[in-house]
Structures are given as structure tokens and as C-alpha cells.
Image (cartoon, rainbow, N blue to C red; front, side, top):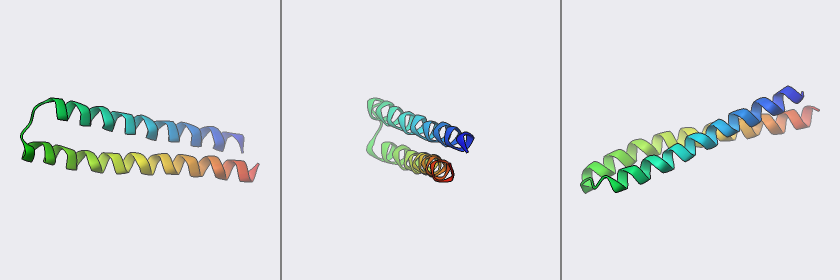
Length: 71
């Protein structure tokens, strides 16, 4: 089940990459000098992507643990 460990690691890294993208998007939004309402709307959209990224990371880590337990 070594392939499951590598697959899980790849999925978890994709999730971490998505989280980093969310952080950079928030920094760009804050530097853009938007009004409070516009900034709030953009950040609310980014929260959805951030939660999806956390979910992908968790699924990847679950695959890694499952691969380790099945080995």
C-alpha cells in the first residue's frame, strides 16, 4: 500500500498549496486598498476556498494514515 501513502502525500501537498494561495490572495486584497464592504465580500469568498483547502489536506493525511495502517 505504498502507493496510497504517496497519493495521500500528493493530495495533502495540493491542499497546503491551496492554503498558501489563500494567504497570498488575502494579502493582495488587503494591499489593494478596497473599501470595508468590498474587502469583506472578497474575504468571505476566500474563506470558502480556505475551508476547501483544509478539507483536501485532511483527506490527504487520512490517505497517508490509511496507507500506513494497511502496510
